[in-house]
Image (cartoon, rainbow, N blue to C red):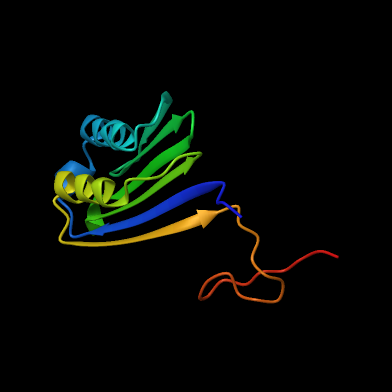
Length: 132
């Protein structure tokens, strides 16, 4: 079965704390990330936390992108979920890493909407259950 969507999860550590707290810069980064995956932007929602940190969610016709930042930990968590077309994983990860000046990056790409075989684990550390 073909995946219904692709979900990229990116953890960025040792980032520039000032950039992580700069809401316009983070918003622009996420819009650029949406363009990188050739997505159609529908809208943007953003929030600045007190005393620091931001969240930006970009709603796209194909699903969404989101970022949550913790400047005090020099850390950002990013999700890029797309449906219906392939994701340019390396390009998105490179863009995020470069613009946030990340010292360490980990990324996982998941195929969404594929039913695993009954009784088997879908991925390491993930349990599945079926209702009968």
